[in-house]
Length: 189
Ligand code: ADP
Image 1 (spheres, rainbow, N blue to C red):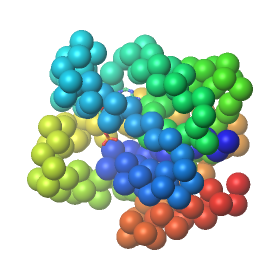
Image 2 (cartoon, rainbow, N blue to C red; image 1 turned 30 degrees about the vertical axis):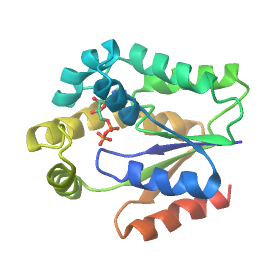
Image 3 (tube, helix red, strand yellow; image 1 turned 180 degrees about the horizontal axis):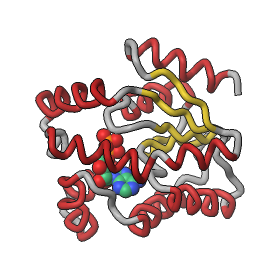
Image 4 (cartoon, helix red, strand yellow; image 1 turned 45 degrees about the vertical axis):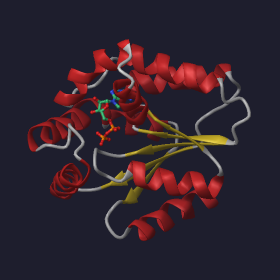
């Protein structure tokens, strides 16, 4: 099994790279952002609760997120491995993921962190807002998402670094160049 956390600030390219990596290695993709948007589109109770939080760029509660992951992962006993994208986003989520994986006899092998500077993130997200119309890709929410990342999410890097699992990757360049950097590390594991 190969279990990867793909990490980085909003707009660093996690979703784009995840899609390419799952194709190559046959992994199952777990994007908590995509899961939440699906709940929102289906107008479930969870989706309705999450909507205003996501529109402000704040984090949905750890309890909801962990419950969602627990539900999905239990139906994936046959998976070759997982790529977690946009999760864990707090140290509490990282701790809960370790507990959950241990129960299942699994573990995280590596955290790949896409490193991109703030101004580039803002430009990419504004462009995505224009192209795809995602409700949280407007300047005010983007700035808050980056702040929330710095305050609440960046400590997750230290959590995996302490376990010797963090690998930083330059997130600037073409999609293919960045993909080569990531798959180079994964292939050498
Ligand atoms: P991005 O990485 O571009 O910010 P995502 O699609 O990963 O976008 O997440 C969109 C929003 O969904 C976040 O701003 C947050 O409100 C919510 N969200 C996604 N994943 C999590 C998570 N693991 N914990 C808490 N909130 C989350």
